Length: 484
Image 1: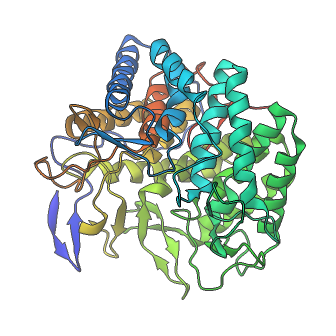
Image 2: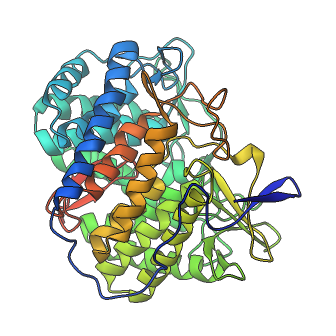
């Protein structure tokens, strides 16, 4: 598995150790319905539910009401502004998995959260609070319809809406909710500005408050109007004050940009506005021709475009959402060529897990010119991220190919073996090390509850559970029913 060190990278073979081999190469076939819910898949689904109970028990016991559990020190933190973010993010997962007692206790706590306050001097991330807090409340409301959840979602929406009071309507990336005077950095990332439309439009639809819709639509219009060099590609940063893109940025579907591209397609699916369909298709065509590369062994990846026009042969874990998005677009828009690429990229994302000693994927994988793969010591963390299992879920639902369930189960078993600790689950420092002494981080991000475990649970659930032709999942995996 570990073949040597070159230029600061650990070089790895495609096939990992510990007996993990790829039994099937990606293939293109006509979409079919997923298989019935077999006893084996029921067993796996129950195992994920048990994992959710274990993670929640650690949070409830040691960090209830705080933002996140720190499982190694059995404590909680308030890194997101003391809005109980893990609780909000986990609500619909608890409801979905029929953890009734846990859900009722969590929902009761929502009433006590004051979304107009945060610790003195603390600035909240508008992007993170949109996808985790607002999205979490709306996702739970979708499954429950308790007016309390909508009331608190409106409270979050009104608080966050202050950040959009700028000359362009683009939001500041940070907000001091205790200070009525707005201030913030003049630049926002593409993801920060372009990942709020689903949440605020959903809030507008179910609350009847049109201003939330108009605010979100204005942001989309400004992002589209900014001057760009590449059709279908958008720079990573934009000025909140002028609405013009920075000229020095790279192009990527990874960090700082990822969910902007995701919300193009999902806005079209949710609301039927054809302009988002057009923008999504243009982005896929540009990404496919500009950012997709292959190794000599024909392993496809999505890199990033540097300022000098060079393709950087590096794929982030965050970018592993993209094959699932491609597969969804292939089905909705009848683009079979996108399903082919989706299968290739999903295979690559699984290889990034399969090639490591722990069976868990690093933050970044590098694709060497001669066909090898590498991991930098600085990028070797596993943060309990969801993107790969998200794509496995979508690919299984769309193709019915059971290999995606097998790959997902293999990943889940690795999580259980290496990330499970006495009081929850912990991130890994280095996916290449199986000796867990000093290889765990005191962190269990809220997205592990909201996304990773939810997508694994759905991967082993019947296709009638939150079907993709009836629901859209936000970038934080919160389900919204499609209402065009």
